[in-house]
Image 1: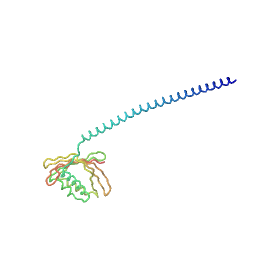
Image 2: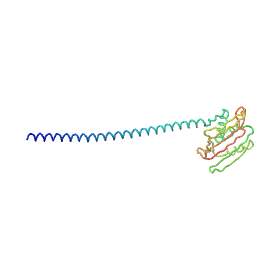
Image 3: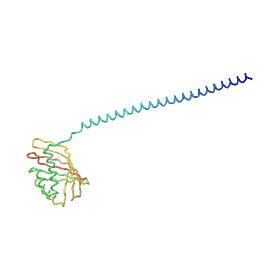
Image 4: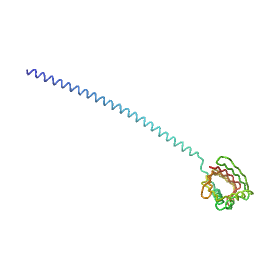
Length: 219
């Protein structure tokens, strides 16, 4: 009887050991699968990092290329034209004379910027882009100014000037520039114009105009 009990106990121990071995084996298989999965994920992450780094290098290279292109373009840009002091003062005095014509009904300040003999060429494009042209000279220009001064409370104001071209040759000069002009009726702005002007003349005690040409475009 004792022998039978011993055999039964041994059998149970063997079965228990076998179950434990099988359980450990399954756990090892499961752990191995998890490790393989983690390794695969790590490889994928490393590959993705390489792609991102490559893309970043490409973007950095593109930005550097754009910077180089911008610097090259800036180096090729024409430098800002700076007119001599006498010419810049003439433009300022000329605009002040036009403004005084409307505000104070006086043409003296305007006319002080002209030589004794001069010519005028004026072209205007209205809002319908219809051109209007007029030529005058020292014999007729002041008469036209007298008509302008008869306007009811009309005044003119000039904005920022940008010089496009300036050249002097001894006493002679020529300058081209753009400006914005605003026309007022009382305190109300009634017109805005873009103006391109070309002045040519002579510098003695000051710069004075021999030819005054302008194109005004109504906005």
